[in-house]
Image (tube, rainbow, N blue to C red; front, top):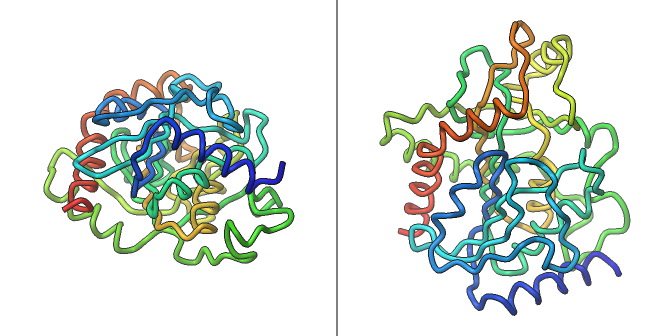
Length: 278
């Protein structure tokens, strides 16, 4: 089947489970999936039940699609995502973003857990993504490689302003009203993983202009922009990753840091949705 047919088959199945037409899509990264439990009147669909959806194999990713309400905004939420390092193609792991758009979402809030390359960042801080450096894309791994279907988007989408400035300003306003939230703004670097970076690699990423590093997000943003969606990106800083660190990071520590930041993360996202809904 061609990609468009796969997207439409998956969309039709989700619509058979919920008649809601969400306006906002949300992707919840590692350890951040608890926000999905706050979605009201939710239809929750395991990924394995949706045609052409993959299985999330990573701890901290529940693997469900939810449609319901948050702050009176109709949302479609990915409780966990797919990653390139799981062995999936870029087209397959980004298919849910296309389904979100076909369901009605014109905006995407994409979140992740990331290492803080910027020395000013501390675990538990948040970073608005102003821009990204997609090292996979620069190496030729892009979800738009191959024949382009104009029904999904134009051949050469511009990414110069991939992360919406108005949405970032809105997020800063929300965070300013919550003193417990430290919100930075910076550049996110995506690497392939699943191994964590060496000290030399982290120093290189800092020299390249990145403030945080992770293993997701850029392909989803590319596809969202390909389909004309506005994008807001938020990274939770779970550990310092300047290249000068003594301690070795591991996934369990990332999840622990994400769990500790859960109330602040929920307040930030719900506050943003509240303004959007208002």
